Image (cartoon, rainbow, N blue to C red; front, side):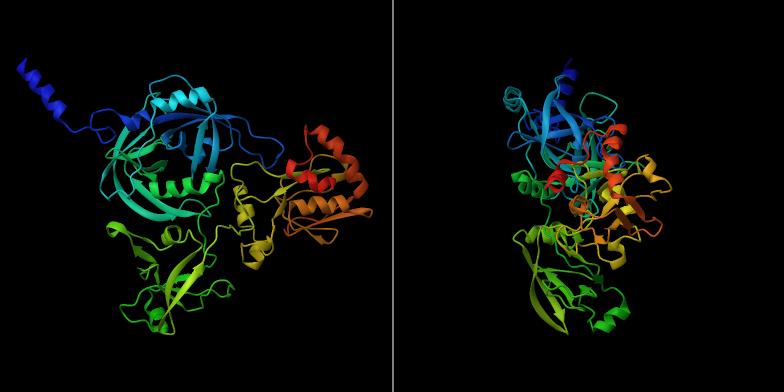
Length: 492
């Protein structure tokens, strides 16, 4: 008996798990919920519809302000969202109040007032750790991976922290861990010493025990940004062409001393608002030395790519830099903004804008359409070698599906998703401009010309096109000829 008593005493003397309070109350676990979402994805070929519903589950946790944070990919394009508290079978209706696929984060709010008050009185907000976790520290992932209904806790080690791409348009700090992460863990907290260090957002299917975490620094940037309900993004420097200076011949050409490090600016075209000149050496950003590979040293000796300083120092719209120009240091201020100037934008959490005109289905070119839009060698942005808008409102307008069946389409075919160039000689600027151009068109025929070399020119009788609209809408079960945003351009 005394041996059993000694064992109990020894067990009680063991330190509390990292996810528990010192008194043994599992506060972090109390704040972790299971998220259920019904996904209705977009259809680019039939943009007036949505894809068949699919059910997904993930994790989330309570943060300040009676809110729940999770991953965007758990709740994007969801027709309904429910959250289930720990140790409960109740599911409460929730809604997405802010989301960014770029950084893969979303905020949920409970819809029912009485449920909201009762839930948050029992499930407190977690505590965020202000600093990045030390490399080699032991962390725990809490969530609801597939294969069971109860919470799961897996343990691992922080193995890497880097500044890396989250999406095609955004990069940020990312923590790599070797904890076992599976589908369903997404959106749950990663915990160190009772504090949350970030949001679990992905594992690698082809690699064993490698997963990634969105650190608290990135989460806080998102939370601060979406206070108005809209994600504006991170500060952007609209200048590219920074090149590493590791090559000996390049260093000799620039006259760099052995100890001199930095990135050389090699842009071929000057940008009016950017005070950089070709062959400027980016020596330091905000007092942080830049090495020959573009790395800087931040806290705890961690080395990451220098653009991390844009989000840390550039929230006010600029960042101070030191460049070496013709052998002498020059202090500059680089302007930043939050505007994405790319012609091809992401669809995000919305659904495609569209316009059906007779047998033709037009929509905007979205990055989710894949390589055809992003890397089409015939597109205007590929031809000019610049992905940025040349004028306000520039978009690619594409025919998103095959021609709807009708006698007036005889002999015509659509090749892929061709990009529209002009209608009756009028160059099309964007989808709304196309709608207005067709609304105001005169003459007997309409001529559609495309950038794509493999796409033939389409010529239709204007009267026959207009007469076919109602018949084609009815035959194809299309309730609305156009998305709501296009209606003012068609009626005015």
